[in-house]
Length: 475
Image (tube, rainbow, N blue to C red; front, side, top):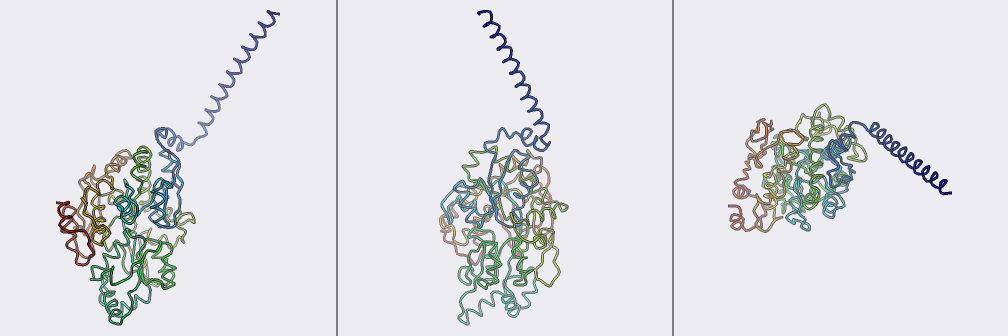
C-alpha cells in the first residue's frame, strides 16, 4: 500500500506540473496572439506613450456645438487621444453654464471653454470661486455680429455712408438708438452667449467704439448659441454676437445679415480654451500633459487646408455641431457669407486652430480679458492683473507639452496687440513662429505693461474698482 500511494503521489505531482506548463504556455501564446492583433497605433497608445504612467485614462470632456470645438473632436475622432493612452468621451452640453458647473463639480474632467471662463471661475466672477486653469488655447477668431433684416434696413436709412465702411462700425446703430430714444421707445434687445464670454466683450467693444453704452442704451441678454437663430426669427432679439455656424445659419435662412466678424474687430483674437480645475490638474499632471499633447497635434492637423473638409464632415455630425455641412464649411474653408444673395467673401483666417501660435495660452490675453471685466464692472475689487493671469493661463504647461511634441512655442508670455497690420515673425520663441495681423478696428494698441493707461483710454465704461487702488496693485 505505501508503494501504491508513493506511485500515485508521484503521478499526481507530474501531472499537475505538466498541466501547469500547458496553462503557462497557453497564456503566453494567448498574450502573443493578443499583441500580434493589436494595431501599431494601439501599441503606441498603450506602451510607447506610457499610458501606465497616467493617473487617469478614461475621461469625459465637454463641448458646446460650435465649429471651434474641433480640436477636441478631432483629437477623439482621428486618434490623437488614443495615441497618448487616453480613452475620451466627448459630451455635448447645452450651455456654457452647464460646462462651468460640470467641470466645477468634477462631472467633466475638462472642457471647451470661453477664454474668459477660467478667469471668471478663478476670481469668482458671476459664480462660486473655483480655481481653474488653461494650458491650451483652442483657436483664434470664429465669431460675428448678426442683426435682423429690419434693423439692417433701419441702419442703412440712418447712415448709408457708415454702412459702406469696411469693417462696419456701429455709428449707424448709434443713430437708430438715438432716434428711438427721442421717440420714447424702449431699448432694443441684443444677445450674447455668456456674461464672461468673448462675445460679450466683442459686442460691447464694437458698440462702445461708436459711443453706445451697452449697459444703458441697449438691453444685452444671454442666449445659448444654438438658440440664437430661433430667437432672431421670433423677433425676441434684433441682433447677436455668436460663434459659427449660427451667424451663417441666419444668413442662409434669409432672416439676418452679418455686419462684422470678430476677426475684423480684433485681428486674430483669442476665442476658446481647454479648461480644467486647478486641483484636477495637480492630481493628474501626467494625464493633463497627455491631453495637452493630443490637443496640440489635433489643432495642427485641423489647421491644414487639405484636412479642413474632413474636419467639416466630422464636426457637422449630429453628435457634435449638428448643422448642415454646407453651412459649417463656409467659415471653416476660408470664406464668409455676410448676406444671403451675395457671394461669400474671402476670410482665410476666420478659424485658426494652430497658425500664429494660436494654441499658446498668452498671459497677456488673460490680462486683456481681466481688463474688460474691470471695464464693465464685473470685477469691483482691485487685483494684481498680471499675477492673476500667470496663475490661470499656464504657458509653462503648454511649453512642456509643445517641447515633448516637437513644435515651436513662444518663450515670452506677453505680447503687444494692435501694432501689426501685416504678417510678422515672432522671434521670442523656441524657433521663429510666423504670426498674423493683430490690429483692432478702432486703431487702439494694447500693451500689457501699460494696463492702467489702457483702461483709462476707454471713454465708455462702467468701472467700479477704485482706480487709485488698482494703480497701486499694478504699479
